[in-house]
Image (cartoon, rainbow, N blue to C red):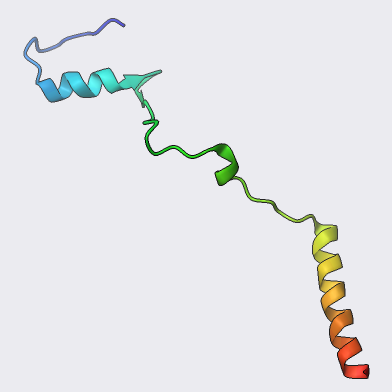
Length: 67
């Protein structure tokens, strides 16, 4: 990686931060706090499943009222 140095005197913090950057200054992620992708994903019910659940709830209420 080539660096353009405008000022030859840089701080240690700047050098440390520069070392943490890759791919057009996108910070490298730490592996310490990462979770598996499955933890980030949610199961989203389909429209048909939502309608089915709603129908079952209404049917259950009607059965209680009739019975």
